[in-house]
Picture 1 (cartoon, rainbow, N blue to C red):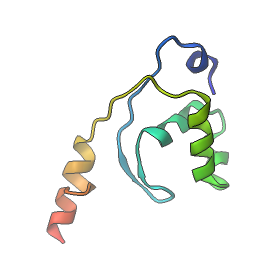
Picture 2: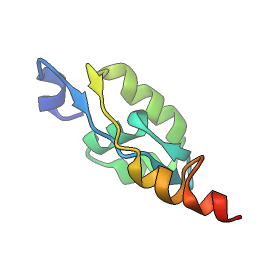
Picture 3: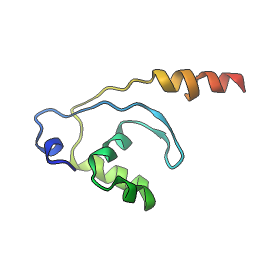
Length: 84
């Protein structure tokens, strides 16, 4: 992880939930993969375990999600699901 993330007094995670082929739904936990240098490699082998491991290293103090996109396009109650 980035040194800044590890040394920060307060760590705020601002993910945007979306559908994802490998994890079906991405939320705050997968968002932390972005703090790893070689995230492409993490996607190739045991992505779910890597997500869990990263989230044990530095837990956010606050998670704020903007779910407007997923709810209006492809979320559990989004427009795409209402059309089918």
